[in-house]
Length: 242
Image (cartoon, rainbow, N blue to C red; front, top):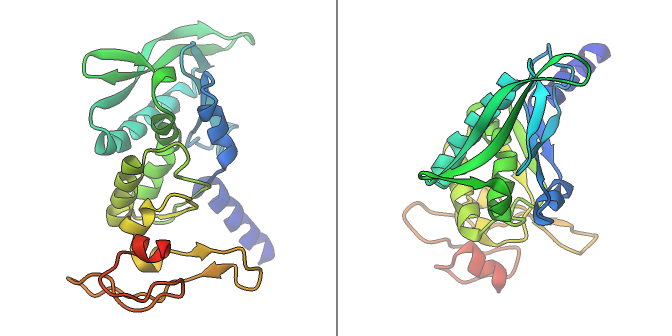
């Protein structure tokens, strides 16, 4: 029984759980020439459950058997990006066969951003755009699959407040899976339902706080909060700031 449970948890961890740490964003904020992207590898690919680094301005080379899954990931990224930033489209540019060092077949290609008819190297996009691109494949899985859980450390890191709000609004309204994230930005307080919010404190005796404020359909937020707000007709952000 224990072995069966262990196998189930292992399978869940590989296929239905993704954790994006803040360390990944360091590559983006430093404006380096590569970007971490998670790939949904099949069983036939040894690197299943892991991501790869895609170069912004230089060429990428992957094994030929892996290229279709990279291309599919780019398509998934575009599904999310078009709903958030309609004018941007991510494309694989100039893909062709290449012989790898080990003698196996590979594919060489570049990744570019399209804004209308203009081709733009991803290196020159903002850190927020690159952050969204990096986790978009996971957001798509979270959007479509009930069993999927995406955990993101500091989701707001480098993302403009407007984009953060748009992303959260789409995920809250239509996502089938579960998105768990931390944020220093207060924009989530204006977007998310109150029962989806959990606050952290420096009090070791009471590290986590759940708000007691309730919402009545058609009316502003009312009630009392375990934080500080006691006034009616207030938003969660206003109450938190008090």
